[in-house]
Image 1 (cartoon, rainbow, N blue to C red):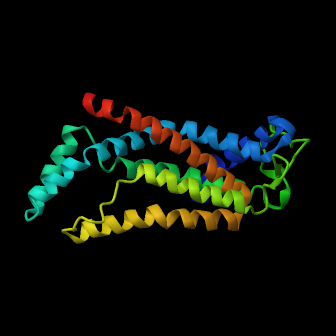
Image 2: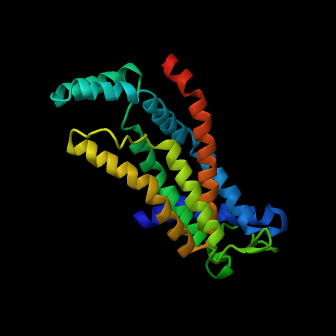
Length: 245
């Protein structure tokens, strides 16, 4: 039942959207269609992503205050947690909102992978997955910009996906002060997780992007580029947002 709902309401609309875009982009370039579909999905999810990104940016601005609270109440964890939550409330922040927003986006992200990975397998459009009003494109070019096979593997796009993922995480994740002594297992776990996300995850992205297809790598590059631009925009506005919160 869940698979049927996923296929009907998420996968099929995205796949049909990709095929439609192939029919309207210049030369039927599937790479261009992948970029456009990724951007369209990012804009649809933008209200959710913007709220999460804004919250993260505002939380980074109050990191010095949180650090001061942790030092002041180092021996009283209960009071420390209370003061931190009071600080969040003062600035109108919900530290758990990002988790909910991420969960909302997971089905769409998975569907996009299936569209770019399975939907383009073998360089053939699966007509059985198309709506009656979506025709099979007459002109289809699987070489992105004329030289990258979108159904094959590309070291260049995979490397670009990994590098862009690093910069996206560098902007979005909280800074890690390795010189500061941690006072609890929770702080140590958070520091290690942040470190691994920042330096290990981009490597993981590179290998996944290369092992699946150039279409997935191109999706990741486009998505990261959009997120990086969004992060810069939010960072410029973060101080003003915090003051008016």
